[in-house]
Length: 240
Image (cartoon, rainbow, N blue to C red; front, side, top):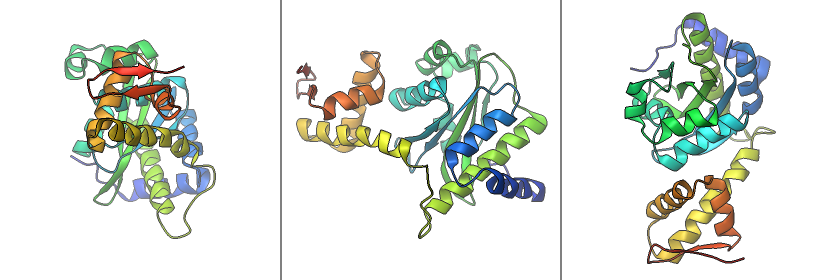
């Protein structure tokens, strides 16, 4: 069930927007700094599943966690968005999570995340994406800390919504979009190479990244740089 904001939550959201906006990245960094034991944050903008754009990652672990969820197509981010509710994982090594996300969970632990909290970014009935917060050790996000995390999520939602308004493009917020554009360009190239729809081409790109144990962005850069070409026979050719 979605979290229903009360007056105190709305007031806190407004305070955070005023204190840390308009840059979404700066807001995420403030969230990490203010929440005890939270080591990093990643923010993904989602229009509809499986489409997912990593907007911001505060550190290398967060970047890897976000990349894994895009590449593998599983993880708390997907569920938080689909169900419009927080997904709070106090220990990724617990059997309920290893069974639920059999590919994502061991890879995220290996990357340095042990607890993970995915909070949907909602404005009214609209969900704009998800913010993922991680801890390097097991532990809960509850009580006042959870309320504060939800307020940061609400503030991020407000900033993302503001960008969509006329003249609302905010400074310092497009670096990750530009970075992620290479994935879309590569997907388009694979679609043309194989003669398949865009969603199928993206699945092929994800599958290759996973099977070769590389990041989605690295593989996409090789495709765009014409160092990697997908063929109809499911073979991938490299040119150097």
